[in-house]
Image 1 (tube, helix red, strand yellow):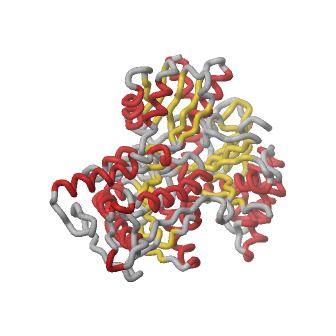
Image 2 (spheres, each protein chain N blue to C red; image 1 turned 180 degrees about the horizontal axis):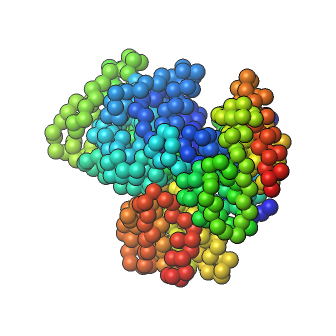
Image 3 (cartoon, one colour; image 1 turned 90 degrees about the vertical axis):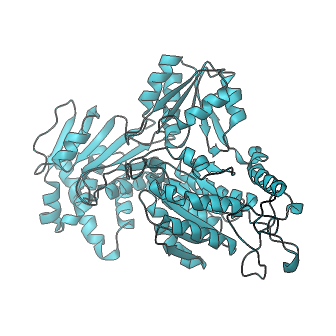
Length: 181
Length: 377
């Protein structure tokens, strides 16, 4: 892959999307040995407001650190989906939370949906790991980082007591995305 | 042994660079988007025997780092936007007292509170003209996480070498983005320390020009005593209004930088050898420009990039030479034309200079630059 691959995680401030982007980029950069840049944009609010985290992955030097045309987009809220889906690439992939994003944008891209937050809350057991469920799903859908690398990057950021919870969240997101594809 | 690598944020890399340079004192007042510098320094300084203090405001923080430096510790403050405005009076004090300090300023929108989380490049004029009076100015504008680390080390080196405040000013995009960084081993990068006095304490004069334009600096607490003031001073540090002394002192202070421009100014040239259109850019905007240059080359347009790494002193002679060999210059920047003014001044009309200005909190994207290249080629 010599081309840039651009991923955007979007939702509301406080949902852990910047962290999800950071982990994806760490997986690419530290564990998979690719080039990666992560950047973010958010409003002045500590919670709420549309927030996005972008990751560029490439085999060669990454100059422009922000997205130009997005290959893969995650939207965890309707507001984020409305605001950040305009530059999704033709043939790209959009992952949405099926409970929270009811109006899907129109375009020539694949839409994958499942109840991401509900999965975290009721199947994994803690809503707080919704970002890791989403990350697992994005790893499965994009194929731009290795599953092993991504899992290592998740676990490197998690305190010992929460390793199992996050492993479960990551795997659940990964499996659900494959099933929903 | 393999070198230590990490996936780090720009601000975090700045703090790590300061520690590498031997910084032992940080005073600041947290402000977005520079806060992570203070966060890392507060965690790391105690581990290396340093001190961290959160002051009551940015003015107090600037005063504290001047004190820290005069007590012999390499000192850092970090701020952004309105914080830089508040520090300006004390930055002038550091200039005239000749206290080596480093100011890490992350550029966000302005004036005033502006757009706290949005990127900007609109503090570059404040870095030179923000404090009143004639004074030396050094300002570095890194464009990557690795470069923030290395340039923070260089900022300390320049501060120590020339006994003057040095600003390092990443824009918000570079400061907040994360990239892989390879940590230099100890000793791999040059670390410069100030020259200590060679004379006994009773013969020491803090501004004794017989040692050159940058007189040795004693540390308070080491047995040397001297007077520090914001007034124009004589060699012994006490105020003077003697015309000849003041004239010579002012000229010497500015000369510390002006006579050493080639030692201080750094830049990067990309695809300029045969270029007909040159982009002059800095910080994150230079990364958009590099992308645009590659796209232009694919389309058969001879474009190139001059990346400014040291904004002050400005690379006058390089820009002048560039202007005489290209057909047009494009200056994209996240402000309303601050770098453009300087480039036009240096170009002396030899090439037209076309600005691309953006102050809406969004980066200048490669497409905007590419469009302009096609327009002016």
